[in-house]
Image (cartoon, rainbow, N blue to C red; front, side, top):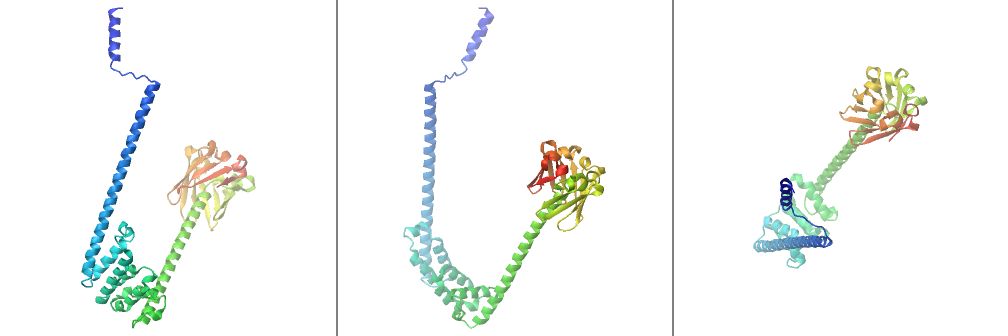
Length: 376
């Protein structure tokens, strides 16, 4: 072996020693799988431990909150037993309501059967001592359903003199409801006139609600109408989008059915592709289309609508029949049309509308210009 070859062999041997060669055998694959499974098991155990720790922390935090609630209720009770206090009575009732579904309530540390009437008693005593509209509303909320009716009804005569004028209708409605709708149970001097104020306010609210509902319905109708008009405008400005009249769309025009009614199109001077067309719209009025430079299929067209707006259509690559077209609608959006298989008037087309929808038109018997199209 020549010295040069000896040098090359030595260099290769030295290089090979830098790389770790792994031989794939059944035993090596088994060990690799065992290692992977061990790693997965360890990760699962770690995740389970973390979940357990998080659960324990959440339970400890809830227990701390429950203990704090119990302590706060005891502190408020101590103060309220010394004398009525509206603010503290409301705070006690709020804490009782918040603790209703707590673990402390479920495990018996908080006896809700006794706490609820206790909270109502504090509120009643506070109202007797210093009536206020806020205390009345808190009592109404804390009293709950029909079982609390007598408590609220007893408070109505005491609170009425301090009810502000803007809250009178609501106050009277609450008292009437808590009396089972029997106006005779409203026991304060101005009850009769208060009922008249309440009914007047309710009538005004009913009229306002009806007006709002009517306005909303009208807005929805206008939006639907605008959407329908937008679709009609788009259809009216598309060549041969319907049933050809006398088997010749290019000369005699076509008719298209829409949700708003029929769009009837007639060619100007018997040559739609040169002189454009006029569309009779379902709601009245006409949409007039003019070919640019006397060649719609090359230079596009412009459609003018009854309201003075217009839509402009440009042929892609100066060949609408092959490459489709793009229409800029009156609202500023664009409708893009693509010919199927490069031949609109044989294989139809698909138009993507600005609102995300699309219209697909297929040529009847592969002859759009004589047999018309079916669009959906």
